[in-house]
Image (cartoon, rainbow, N blue to C red; front, side, top):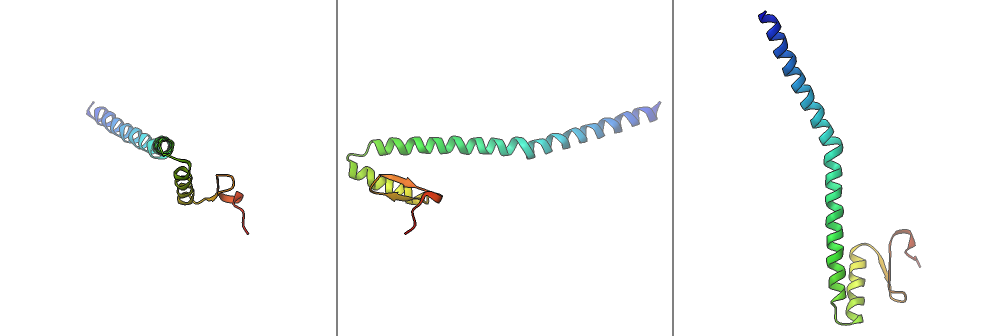
Length: 95
């Protein structure tokens, strides 16, 4: 009958809408944030590799030390000249 066909069409449209809503929710909640974080990690690794290459190409140790100090400060750390290390967070000496 015609009512059965209308009922099937309404059910199919409802199922399609529900499936779309579920897929959109899964995409927004799980897949998209993971993809963004993965892209950020790749970008950070690429930038770090380029930085390391640039440091390696510097002509002398004084240039390398100046560059490392600047990078340390830009990243919020404290550069210790005595050790040549960049300290961040709780490891930074105070006083």
